[in-house]
Amino acid sequence: MSLIVRRFQESDREGFGNVRSLTYRGGDPVRPDENIIPNDCLGYVAELDGTIVAGFTALKMTCNMWGTHLPCAGIAAVGVVPNARKSGVGGKLMSEGLRLLKEDGFAVASLYPFREPFYRKSGYATCGGRLRISVPAHRFPPVRGELDVRHQSPIDLDALNPCHATFSSRYNGSNVRSPEKWHRHLGGETPMAVFVAGDPVEAYAVLRLQADFWTVQEVKELVWSSRRGYESILGFLAGIGINKTELTWFEPSDSPFKATYLDQGIT
Image 1 (tube, rainbow, N blue to C red):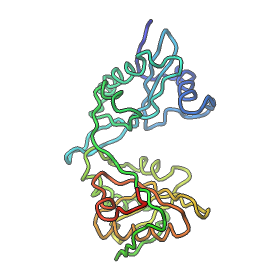
Image 2: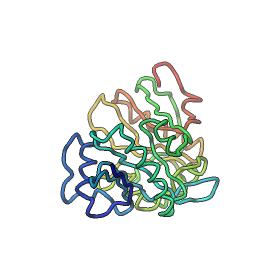
Image 3: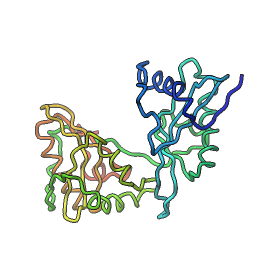
Image 4: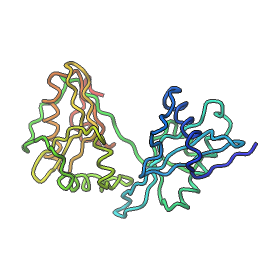
């Protein structure tokens, strides 16, 4: 058995697409015109006896580490075809992939694991956590923020960047966003809504507004640079949830919501 882990080549497109199809799309094929390796990504594959059976992409990012910015590979779409699983292919893909990532200039690699022990074997370590806050609308705390909240359209990245930079500087591994990364994060060609608190911006929320009543409203990102900014954007979310059943969003593990507002019915 010959197993080789190497960089993606254009001739691997069909095999790489097959891995993506069987791992993430329930067998639905990748379209011939689909860009499966975006311009800001690199691809890596595992070839078993001449057939592509696994692969992943690495998003080119820059992360904060004790105030220093390092080139970071954001690992995504890790996949092994069903008939090659439990054979060591996935482990070899990730351990050899780290070697290739170092050769390609990355100092750090990060990912959200399906199982932490699997990735630990390849050299990854748990560096932190995030909390998913779920609040039924009727349990939302009566927060009254002092800053005005407004819808920002068109999106002004120069206004958002200082707030995001202050927030992310508190957490090693947080990403420094280029305009391209902002575009991806804010919804790409179908942009989400951005609401900001304060001028200059001290907090913002990114969400795709749900038109239907009594559904779950998900907030893609909640960021703040000051406590009053946090309180102001939280008060805004209470209004968003007035005709919803629940609001959900993520906060770092030192969550101010958990510390201050955790109550019955909130998870």
